[in-house]
Amino acid sequence: MFADKDLEAVLERIGPDARQEIQLQKFGAQLDTILRSNKFYQKKFGQVGVSDAADILSMEDFSALPVTTKTELAEDQIAYRPYGSNMTFSLDRYTKIHQTSGTTGEPLRCLDTDESWEWWANCWTAVYRAAGVTPLDRVFFAFSFGPFIGFWSAYEGARRFGALAVPGGGMSSFQRLQA
Image (cartoon, rainbow, N blue to C red):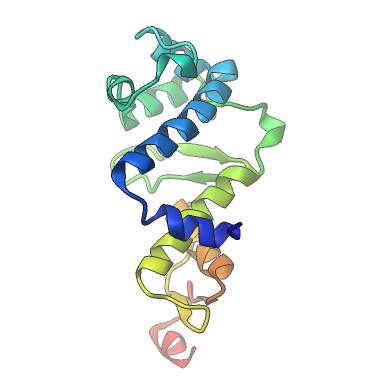
């Protein structure tokens, strides 16, 4: 049996057919969870006749799903402040909040569960592994984090990967060189 990180490494290298099968299975499990309570996706997928995972049996079915745009999510957050109707769980299940950078409009606020935070960190561990980072490396973060998820998840991914994560936001260039 594989340890979790070993399994992730194996999954990164499997062939496309096996990968698609796993993706469909994972998507189906998430879709059923989402469609039980997420009003945003109940409405969006209901408009194309999708009410549960049994409606998505192939990659062709998956490919026919409507794409969700940032504009849709932004409009939903304006209509249903402060987080929109794209909530799968009750508010007490969420443990963190992040938001987009806001470079193309009002930032989107996103609520995270412990499980979604774990997913973000796992994405970054895959990036570090692909880049050849090892637990002996140091990853220096030369920026302040704020609520932008990219920096937080990269930091958390480095930490979980076993590399030394060094925060450098708010430091002068000289202080960064000293660090």
